[in-house]
Image (cartoon, rainbow, N blue to C red; front, side, top):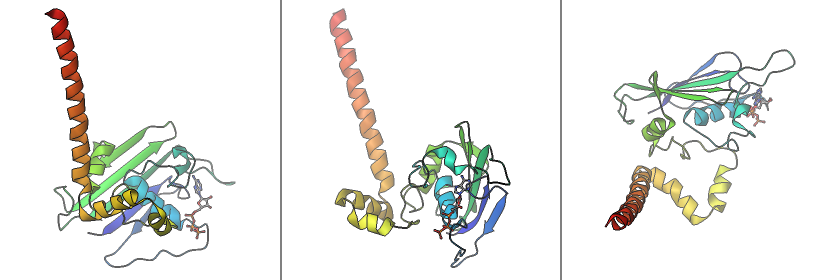
Length: 199
Ligand code: ATP
């Protein structure tokens, strides 16, 4: 599995449509301070569903949209598309490539697409869960993240290992099932109360 390409438009310091193609193997992105290197890794995390504005180094989600410069006006929307190779079938998508697109409008609306089909954020998360690439995955280690992992509580650190071991998917499903069970138990109590009143 490897990143094939990343396309940015209106995202942070990339107002124009910019396509970065990665080949198999190692890629290094170099450039002067403030030239947008970290914005590229922000874009990868963002398109995969990152919701934390803090980890995207902004104060609000709108900060991912190109905010304009002295010579160029701000844009109304940001769009990022990531293409990953799936020839080995690592992702649960029946295609040789996985194409994820996220659009965000200043008005606050978000759109997600998986292989050009409109989906929910939840569907994107499902595809990348346990691959290390998803939300809170360990594939993208930002500046200071290693220190953060070492300094964090052991329960939080465990989440990183759970994602690597592939158990996040099961933990999430278990939590969902527990929530549904609680809800059903509450409904049963309510039904019993109504039943007793009618008796
Ligand atoms: P360093 O080497 O110092 O870590 P870098 O190459 O990683 O720098 P980034 O942090 O990716 O640089 O980019 C910072 C630049 O992106 C700044 O010039 C900032 O003004 C610009 N930038 C960030 N958000 C936006 C936005 N919404 N609109 C326009 N420009 C933005």
